[in-house]
Image (cartoon, rainbow, N blue to C red; front, side):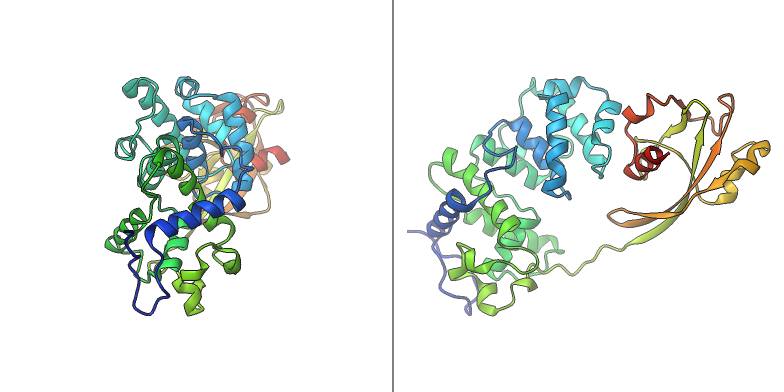
Length: 359
């Protein structure tokens, strides 16, 4: 006999576990997303690539990057054989560049340690760079039918609302408790067929029905037993009290260029903002920037309109300063002149690429 869901006494009648998964699977067959380019495959390379790209990034943005990556790197062997610069260049503009560095490192490890084949279990997948528990579970369940639960942001929203799980998810023990309950709800039979569909279903529910704002509860297959809906406050879930503290930083960008269009770029150190990417020289003040330019060129320094670039935890207030220099001049010892036909192919931070393209 199926076990009932663990819910508060005030909740509506609990669904048996088998009914929960059955409803979710039935909904997915009729209403789930089926037009995304990474769906309908159990190729772990493609599933892994999509899962990494979709972290903190909207589907509409990922589509084009995903297609370009597959065209350039059709399998894990091709990605591992590429240079990190090539990977960062193709990733440029997608943000969260540690994902690209981990992507490349993971591909190399799959080739060197696992003979070019992704491990088949979530536990083993978590030993690879950049693959956390939820991403590992997504790969293992979709590609290999393992009975493991994912817990990304969308799925947390579905589960906490349906179960009335009001514990603070900023506390690790509470998140582990939710993960345990998510595991209880997984299909128990015919896992090779049901686990890929179920995993896709809960992701689709969170992305298209159980929205953060104005959820479409009337179309949800779990509405009959949803605690949050009965309480009339679905937007109160999930509960997470610890907020990320935002900071701000002002940076001056030296846009040094030669008459033939070469641009002075320096590869950013790791760790740090835009680590590993090629970037204009950054300075903490206009005075520090001007000190890096020979005094004979100071009257050529042109201050351009400042703009703000928003990162996850920080607002960057960027102040570009343009100057035309001789190719013999070196604003620093670490950088170098990149020809007009070379710099577009490098991995550049999105605001720097946009700035240079306007030139």
